[in-house]
Image 1 (cartoon, one colour):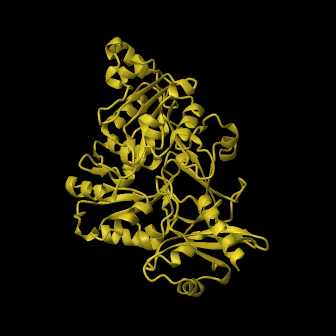
Image 2: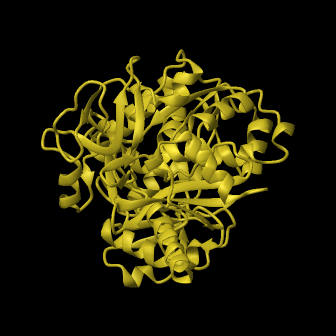
Image 3: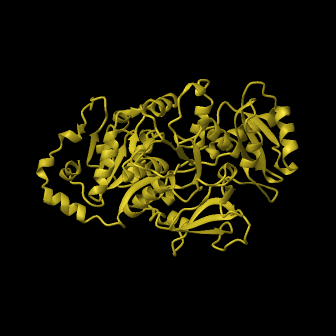
Length: 487
């Protein structure tokens, strides 16, 4: 496959975008590109036409690989006309499974025989560890996604690190529950698996039923994903009917997980779950729990900093370290830190110090066992009258309450306090606002009890399960405004 790309003029440093779901050809294409030093630009498969066009243009993509589609998005339709409308884009190739290219060329239409073995080997020899390998994107919940550049060295070593942390062997069978464009999946599912000779199991879709079918039928041993997907699987009425006895371990990460949910996952799935903290800017890996840590320790912390990285907890907005035991912003330095945001020096300078420290935006403190305890995220903290309040602390009180299907606490504008707390609730069976408020009052200090509790039909989330906090904050603000007008 590398020869086919070379025949298309792809060389070291060429940006090739991939808009495909997880399938064998997608995995092969990504590493065929890396093999010759090209940079694989991985697009979220939920993006629509205008978003795709912007990202193709902003990341200087020369070749675009597209699959069939995802959900109600047909990639062939979304990308139609891009060749005429995006400067620098030379070719769009169809790599779907349904065989209907609809006028697009396919990779099979190329001429690999035009490339000699000697030319291929020379291209491979020119690839260096410090060269760019991937461009992945931050969630982009508040603005245009930032394009994160990582290297051959960081991606390869993160795969090796996470394979080691999970104890991968060639006998393992890894269920790929997340999309390949997600940094977490690319490292712990794909790269780690391939490095150790384990079997990479790709589901028919990311629906819970297809994932459970894959685990059961293929006897998967490793299952790593985000809390939202774990929770969705647990809420299935037929969950207990599936045979998950082959599972032995997995990471949970991608977003913060309440301890109660963590413990429920481990008990009901019946396998060893390891907490982890990662970030796209850190090649997906920052911390992991030890398998020997107690369940309580793994549920309430995100573990220790991974090998070959440095940690510093800094006062928010500064590079100054906090006092021992205090909460501070997690800053890291090491092989895993991105080279920067592509074509965005201003954002790069805000995230990276000149001496290589990455400001993650996550707040935490080190406990007596040397594990990090998350206290929130700098942008997610609700600041009410000078008091910093973590939404997680409020939400944890309601975890397991059958009358609440889902909930999220956000800060809404307030003239007196600056921000007030609003709890957005997706009602479950028997939901009563007064009951919820009384439960919060008996569990939290007065200033942590939400002033507002509003009902919503759903908590808006990204394709990878992260909550769209800004969107939810806007919804809550509008509801409160309407409530105030009616009074």
